[in-house]
View 1: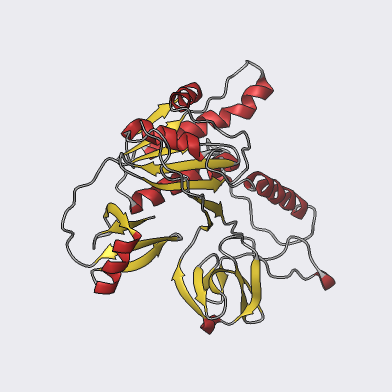
View 2 (view 1 turned 90 degrees about the horizontal axis):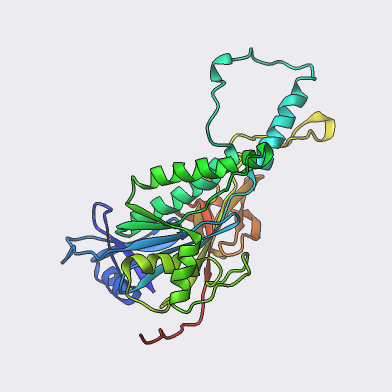
Length: 344
């Protein structure tokens, strides 16, 4: 297991082994911290060497799951499996229905503003998906000295039919927007799907057909093959352990329930603050250990499991929780039994 390392100015250096990181912390040479759920160390002195290897990130995009692999010619440092935000389209539809329903009620309203009728080129659901990919890449860049990205290019073929082309055009627009933004982080290279398959077959690797399983062979096998194509060094995956990221869903502007309750009153709902804590924050509780913050009620906050998201309790005291870091997603470790790399 490798631990990301940054210098005093938060510039990423080459990662180190966990044992060496522990020794640095005990001797005072480094300070531990969390970066979006991943344990890192920050050096308290000038590093002995700033030489870095070429580190590439292979990306296998998907509609429901996506795979990321961070690899150099020597080691596979990290395999990330993510779930995509799939609730935006339904949320936009619900917002539209509630807005139209308010027009038939006798209630106060502000005058119409016609200067805010600008339309984005990306639909909200498409934009949320590609923005999440960009957030993952930026998060990885802040931890590791990444030099390149290799992305499996996805294409939507147009058939000249209006309904078909309308459904698939956002995919092309979102893809090109993502490529332009990703170039600002590091150089990128794209590979077609059949090229990824050829690279996979040349190594004798077989991909699993279970797209929604938490296995390395589902999406991370392709992301590993793409990263290995760029930096080389292996004929077989040397690290199949995964970390699974599930994005949090925050109701930022919805402060009350959509439907009124008893006597026409709407109960409080939504927001991003829970008695001083930002929702989703990683905290350490005296009894429950590491968990993240959910909602609040009657002066207490609810705590949830980091691994599965299940609620642990809803009556935790604020003074019993020690803040660790802000989270945008929950992290689950998927450990696979180590397999020796095949000889060349």
